[in-house]
Image 1 (cartoon, rainbow, N blue to C red):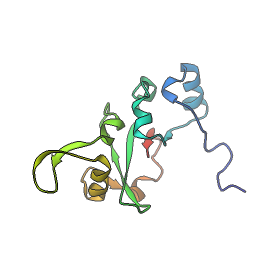
Image 2 (cartoon, rainbow, N blue to C red; image 1 turned 30 degrees about the vertical axis):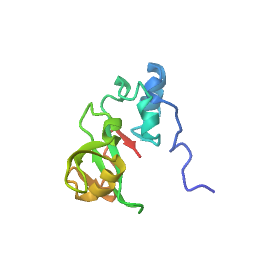
Image 3 (cartoon, helix red, strand yellow; image 1 turned 90 degrees about the vertical axis):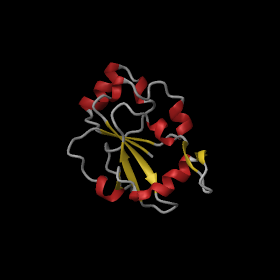
Image 4 (cartoon, rainbow, N blue to C red; image 1 turned 180 degrees about the vertical axis):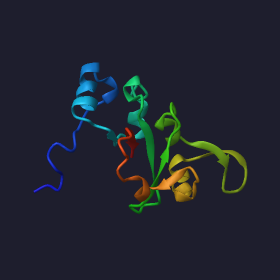
Length: 138
């Protein structure tokens, strides 16, 4: 017996490529307000419809791991910012203090943890969203 109630979780393909009629069924008829995207950054990068108008009105949240533990943080992205941009490396200071070195995005995420003022502990965010439409990138 599954702890998931029937009709509560739906698996989809690339929602950004869905027709207007399909999106109407998903968002109006079924009332879906939360999307969880489990694709890797490489898979997201290849999705040309990732930032399509299908997601207008959605708040994008990126999961940031806190090491290898199960806890972590969520960062709310500014409207129009792709989650792929947030998962790439960035420039900064290396361990020896020289600037311009590329810092691996995964190292950045683990270092940021919940100390980043733009993130919130996941346990505080992962509650009822009050009807807000959200896309979670895990």
